[in-house]
Length: 496
Image 1 (cartoon, rainbow, N blue to C red):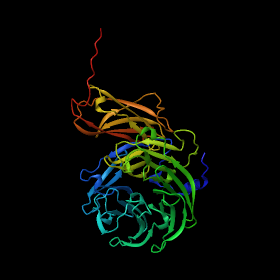
Image 2: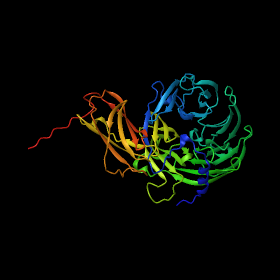
Image 3: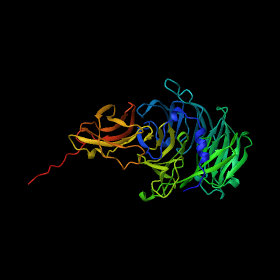
Image 4: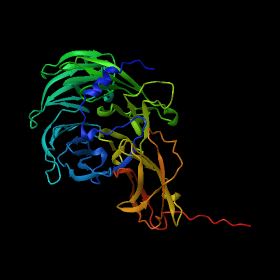
């Protein structure tokens, strides 16, 4: 058993005030399952700009390509598109550029410089994004914001040579109090710190991690940052709730610290060391933690993703799983899967980015799929176990799957696009193959999809619990070939 003290973490979680939007748990013993997919805008390809997912009140903004999509969350789990804005003034053409969002302003950094957009009136019936400024020669890939100060960094992992061998990088502090004229007010060079990889703000202090460790700076006077302290833990990425928790991660491990201080940031205490799940044997390429993670502080979970790594570029080649860690579960070792960890596989052969927990959902941006919503068992979780149209016998077929939730599920209804396929029936076979803390029910429904038109269609599964709460818990996009190509004809057998 790991011996990191957990008392500080428990106290940290207790003192955090609850928010209605983040009231549903994501338990480690329950899988994250695909709830809905919003396809990407046809007008904008993924590689045309940086990308990100941001919450703003009751809305969710998604920047992908040159398009900013604004969503509201529907009762059935799918995100409802309020508006799509093609940002013609966006000059960025770098998919791995930096993005940051705060108080209605979006910052984007790329080879074109640092751009600021006003999104405060981007809503139904509102105005499109407005370009405030574009400052050349500000090229970064990691951004963090605290008030009117943006910390910006081009990471050492992306430099053309090793840090200290001719390549140096630095963290720039940019004052955006006047969004029309951003001003670089200070710069922290790597120097004795080694190569710098990521930045974050915790309790108003600036945290920088890199090859030489993790460093904390007081920027109450942005023009003259002052070093507070450091820890020896090196990292390639950071995740934080901004107040009580800070996670320092690399390709194979993530170390979480409890942050303390009476009026600021004065110390860090290690509380949990999490390592990659034992998934390497399933993949021929090396595997790694995705260099982006999120902390769901209301429910004390660290939401990480697992990628295959391209052996040639050393960059993520495919995101294939969520690796969710429960800070409140006992960290006993000696079993697999570990009781404080839940591995859930993603859908779509692509790299996914920008995990954002909002209520009972986790949103990610995919290179091909667009915006995907994954739901947890605290809401309602399940799956449509679909193979392909080639597995459907002509004249009638069966679609089946499973569902679970904290409250007993009373019924399941399937939809094809906007039309109902009817109610499903439950079977009494226990689904012990699904790792969940609540009972898992199997369901099935007889359908005839022989005459479905050609093209892409969406199958949605909607459950209703015994209290009458209705929610979409799974969706599956299916390509039909058209009448005559949607099924197979059983071969006749002859008897002697």
